[in-house]
Length: 495
Image (cartoon, rainbow, N blue to C red):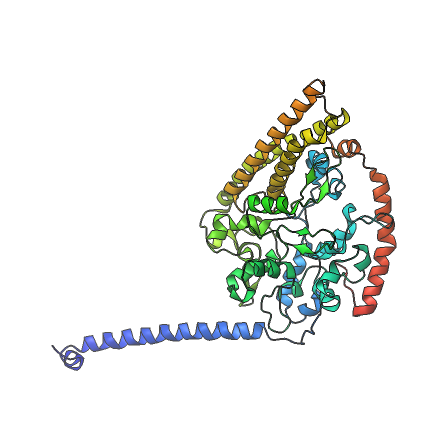
């Protein structure tokens, strides 16, 4: 076999070809190495701090001095102009849109006020403004309700202890909790590493034998969201915030957990059923869907990467992916935007169709149960129906309270809504039998709940009193909170 030297001597063109190939290979290796160095430098300079961030610094604008791109994109969570078919950042009064909800939550705060949630920067403003947290005269909520609203929460927990933080009323800690959801909720102030700042998530995993350091960075890009976007409850007497995950993540597992614990969020004002109020089990529902199973993280779709001035960074404008299809969906899916939107809406339309069937049956069964009690029904006769109502509404709420109208896992959402409808109808049959035994003509003529105002009147809410109390609170107590906070931290930015 001839050596390369011999081949070159015989055919000089062969030598020139070898030389050209070598030059091209060296050039490509150089480009690759340059790209790696550029990315390393990019990461290095991206994390360069102009001013070190002190421990416990909860003002997002101070963090923003070091990370202007992230901070400026975070401030876009103040925008309220995007409306998808079923969600977005525009204001939606869900009680006006679906007045049956007022009856379903009779005796609970959500019957007073329930709007589409706005961006993270509105967290403090909105919890102060909602009628659910009351006013100066009536302030029914515990301090635990602050837990997911502000980076001030871990700061105060560090100061007074976790259990002590949960004690007392929402109103008592208002001057301490003033900065909206932001940087310190998810980042270490020295390394910018993703970190868990709320104890409930850590405690839930520890009860399952898992440690946070065992999770990958990609998993952390969902778990920082799962600190709050999950189902949780307040333990009896202590109001200690706890995730009901000990038996599993599914709606069935959590239902069993709550039943064994004999826990209820409230007793329904009309039906007297021991009710459960789902919070926003986004993470649990997402983990049953195809995106969760394929390892996609919340941040991949809701906070996708973007480039600006040659620098790649995470867009902190946490929002619906439907407002940013190019940077979220189309990173993986090659279809046109219109096609992708149509696919999402098709699934959501079908889920909403089932959800509305459940809502109409649930509102009706609460009203029918009220008539049964009024006509002298006995507790032992009503008990099976009340348990069915509890389970039916819990399952409806597990889907309805999650963001995305079931899109995070359409198949599971429809399965859960199907079981909700079945249980609601079974409950109505039980109540119908009781009414017939009591000599009541069935079906009943139910009151008009076709608007939010009519439904609130049916359940006995005096909305004028609630609004006046809230107005007084905002003009007095809330102003004092801001004054104290400004004295403590030096500045207080209004979002």
